[in-house]
Image (tube, rainbow over all chains, first blue to last red; front, side, top):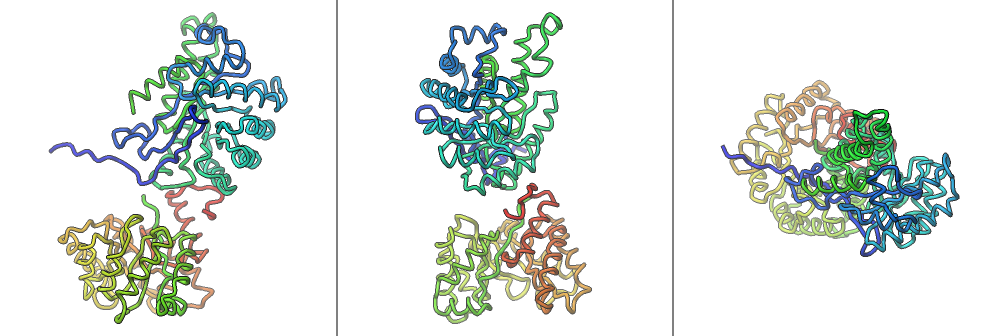
Length: 316
Length: 261
């Protein structure tokens, strides 16, 4: 008997969310199949790959990264260089120096840095995702300031959490037309609830995405995977419109924080160069996140970006 | 698993407001009731025009167009014993949001409504009865099978038959209720779609008691595999029950605000 292909296409689909200004924009979401199942139906938008850089500059102790950013000293230069990374659909600024546990620079100054990076990215034709500090109180003050500074750029700002979503949603989306990420850490019920609450503030589905949490592969990643999978199944097979926003997964911070990416080659000579290990952690984690259903991943190393982008191209 | 389908029952000629609106071709009450039901979570609206022997075709056409044009092409259940009126309704029906539902056929005199559904690519509610109330589940199943085979011979998809187990009033037929639920499970085990006018069960009970009875029976019927119901979506207790049952059966993801959705 001949094989009969029976495509699994859902009546529901993931919402399309566009961010960035004219000539420097990206769209994610829009699919109505399981992740990467491009054999079931044409993929509306391929998953996006972003490259992140810190306002404190790249880690130049890693030879490959130092080479990639060689000569890029100002934030403008670094942002412009990041835009050149092969396979990068967008760039992402991490406002490391605004962290209250670190330099804790004022929000106004951090917003000015965000503006500098966003302008450089737009000049190089890439949209930008700004990552706040992750500190609830600081981000509540910082993200509205960034939203104001980036008026008209339709940037994607991460993240709004249960504790601070109200102020962030109103300032970023309603007042300044930015997009936001709703962040819940591996709590599927909270993920849905946060979306419901944001929607109840009058924010439209095309204006926000979800960050369901992150972890490096091998470090509790299975909880992330099952959370993303459950959300995608609810969105598609149960047509749950409170969960149809695209998912963005910032992979870099976790991937570069685990032992494999941290310990030196002197201490573990048999493990080989640290930079290679970090890249491998990023690639494995990103690939797993995409397989689980992420619509976008954010990576740090240009080598990871290139590989993951090629993986996406090969699969969809 | 597909979501439980709610067919709003409130556009019914037995209601004085609707009866008058139908007689005067007054659009406002129909649109208002339709909208109220959709906002509360109905997927389909039942449009019951009664026997409508005189002007059924005209009323049905008027109502179908009116409701669909004003309510984003809401899918409708066309509810009348006047077959010509159903045909007339289908002739102006917009399918963009779902096939029309013919309400209803049975294994007796109204078997030919299955022909009507087959000829018009419609869904049909198939009452598991022939004359009056079926004696037991063997009889229910016999009628179900008769209609199933009949429809399949006409080339219908079995999923377009929504079998109605025939809800029986509790006051007077209390001993039949467990069997009724068991029959829903049999339909579910066979992979068949089902629907029921559940509020029949609480007929004749005091007004304050009916919502409790309707809600509890709904939860039990859903657990048995009922896939849709013809009901009042503006009964908050009933809607809360359905939403909660969906959560408990893991067909809808829980969030603290789930009752508001």
